[in-house]
Image (cartoon, rainbow, N blue to C red; front, side):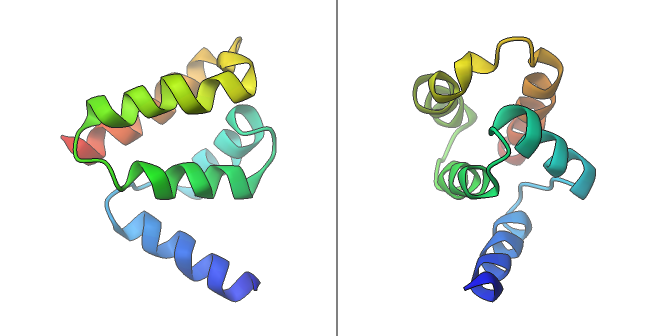
Amino acid sequence: SEKTENATLNETLTKGIKIDLNDRIAFVKHLFGNSNEDYSRVLNQLITYDSFEEAQNFIEDMVKPDYNNWQGKEDYSQRFMDIIEKKFA
C-alpha cells in the first residue's frame, strides 16, 4: 500500500542518505526513467552497503546499465554520487 511505501522511503532517508525533494524529483526523472519504485529500490539497496566503494560498484555494475549508463546525465549522476558518498564519509 502507498502508506507503507512512504514510511519505507522516509526510513531510508533518515538512515543517512539525505536527498531533498527537488533532487529526488530530478533523480527519478533523469536517472531512473521516471520510476519512483526503481529509485526507492536502489536507495534501499545502497543503505545496506558498508563502504562507498561497494555502493559505487553496485551503481556502476547493476544500476547504470539499466538506464543507458546515464549518458548525457552527468550532472545528475555526479550529484547523486556526491550525495551517496556523503553517507559513507
